[in-house]
Length: 87
Image (cartoon, rainbow, N blue to C red):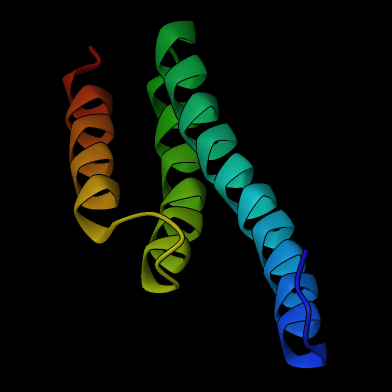
């Protein structure tokens, strides 16, 4: 356990930040899953709408460095290709 007052405060802040980051990372994963579910359902119009909505979530979390920007870009690229490939 932290000994100084400063270290105790930093430990509290780290816990709070960790919980916020976990919640945001979970929202990111949920957004990706929603797009994949829409693609699996086979409705191209709905998949495109859901993809557009989830892209903003993915971009904002990449900007905040909750997830790496390259990971976000890679997943957006793959999801976009999957939506476009739907017949």
